[in-house]
Length: 376
Image 1 (cartoon, rainbow, N blue to C red):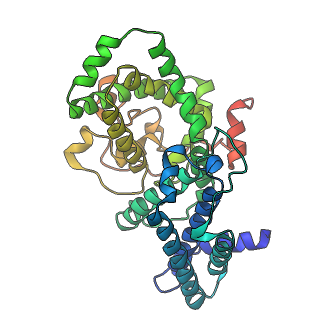
Image 2 (cartoon, rainbow, N blue to C red):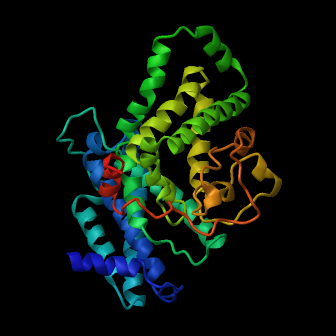
Image 3 (cartoon, one colour):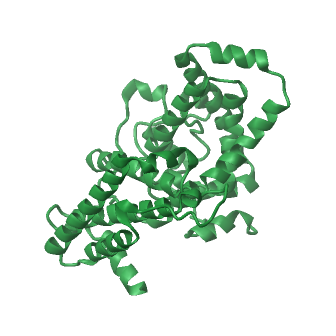
């Protein structure tokens, strides 16, 4: 099994010459990704109360969802066969067919719920699959076409590490959401801001959205800066900065303690002030895409707009390995906050590399999870 895993990894990380169009590499990657997503879909259909989010469960009984799953299985099989025909190393094609076979034997698009475990707690496997599919489809082509560093492959160094972060953070969405919302809900429950909350919710939605961006980013700025200034907190944040390659997946590398603290504080103003539900949803969608975009390996610089909204170049300098990149560009959305507080840095070039000086953070999810608790 270990040898097969190594062969699969080697084929995924194959040199550029072996990834050319017509080599079977693209069809193999697509087949494997699609097959694994179908297998995951079958699992959460079998055990919806354990592996799916309640807000999404109602959609899985619709005929269109079952049809989509069936077409995805057929497409994955077709791509796997194409990989077997075109590629000398056929490990991806065989791995995809194995996943398709397991998914089909478990029921495929006709899978019925077993729900052997009745629980109010769930793991967001469906959220992970939807999340990775949407962001992957959007950002992988974007990075291939407009790459700042075109030599950086899709399966770059430490991609498995960051994908595992993406998986864990998605599976724990219920726990992370509960812990993050607790400070805000506690504050609302123990304060009487009815008049203020009513006024905020009565404003035009576009104005509420802008207000949410400002108050949330102002809070995020100072929480972020504190994580850089206090050594004990920096050890948690250093995990995020340990990424030595920047792309759409790198932003998912965050220690669970930092996720709870950062979200917990930044959620307070937008939740406690009583903004309308649709303004909150619009902001969540915006920050979901924007936070991924500013980590992406894209060369867009945006001209004058980079002084108003955070861009990849702006945030890449926050992750830069150079001495001049230390403790700059803390804002997630509004770079003028850094100008206001004296931490703005955006020269007409990009950083030469990324990470923490000396690279003290170890590799591997579990080692990074334990890193902040180890003696310096």
